[in-house]
Length: 625
Image (cartoon, rainbow, N blue to C red; front, top):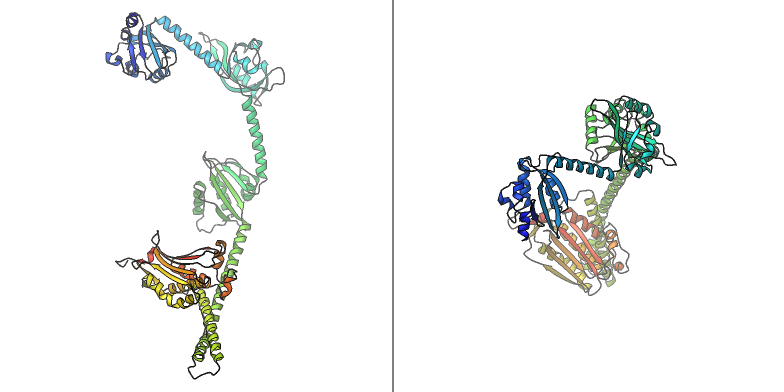
């Protein structure tokens, strides 16, 4: 019965679901729309119907008819609306939308006459204009041929608190108290007398009370059918906030300019075309020889060229144009600060920062003091290096001079201790000879370490490289330290794989590193302790040789000191044996000579682990590479 009733109505009707799909249509719908039945099938998207009608040209008139996208958006919004459309055959249709239920909508179509359609369009236009006027912050007005107000919209009272009718019959010029432009009154009077359109004329109207209000007004002349001038129509808006902000911004800019003039740093702002917008007094002082051209509008290249031609900027290039071009490239594509020496002896540093809007900020600093400090630092560094070289040469020479008599002392004390030329008589002589021999060997070891360090610092130490199995190298060091370890009741364990790749090393130097590390571990490990020497391949492919002990250890912050030449950490246990503190320093430098690294981990009371990391480039693969 409901279906028959809907089919019997004189309106075309369609029910759409939430997805704008057709759920029901009556028989009158197609008589209004005249479209293929398949487009109106149940479940079809109604957008297909709208698209078909639009492509056929149904919405070409009237002028305010919606386009395809607008009509689809209105339907999808599920809000009520009424539209005056042109249907097939230029037939006028009234399309109305009404939401029903939660998500469904009903669209109805019915025919209307041309007069009805015109009246509805006019009514819609008036309503739309009124809505815009009410929603905006502007008010509309109309003046007669004598520039007297005849009508002002209601928004005038809303934003100025003055009833519009109080202005009716009064000339516009008589209602203005102040003009934003100095000659604004004369210019505007001329415009009105010539019946010219005007835009954004800013004035302060006469208002009772203490209100300080500024208004922007635009107007156009209008005429009757005989082209007789009837007056002006236009729009006005309250721009008090904008004027206040503009004045505040102007005041702020002036304060900023004053503050920037007080800076020692030269600052200049250039627009995207390299024209000067603003600069402070310090920038003008730096360009004092061309100060007369440093004004807004001058380009950066003009300032640069003028300075160069006056000889202010010292140029080390023969071609001055190349200097100018290079400086312009640096200005447009800055990659860091640029330093210049001036003819006055000053050094300046120029830095360019590009802003998001394409403008460039140039800052210029006097770095003469910095350059002097750098020169002094270089001189001090050269003196220190020269002193270090002299020290190294002195140590090397002294070491050579000391080694000869010490070798003789060690040799002769050994002969006496062994009684090679007959008995000494008193056994104390043999003990003394042993003490002399031990002390001589100790001094000789110290002198050898000093000589090695001196050679390394002078760059005179050359590696004699050959291939070796790292396990064989470790084993070869054991006889040289095993007796001392046994005397201290310290066990030495070895942990390595015989299948490790061979390494390209200076055998004597690597053994020297390991012996120094083992000697240190024995020295600083208490009776009954343990030392472990291991070799493995690290995660990065390096050969890692480690010496780990259970000795006294040291604090992490003391490790850098222990690695310095002659560096010793104060410890009562450490003083059981004399030492110069050269062992770790020499081990580090010899490791670095192999392009490796020496890494120390230690904890007081737990022990120390020293790792020698030889780079993977020194590993020899089975194919010999």
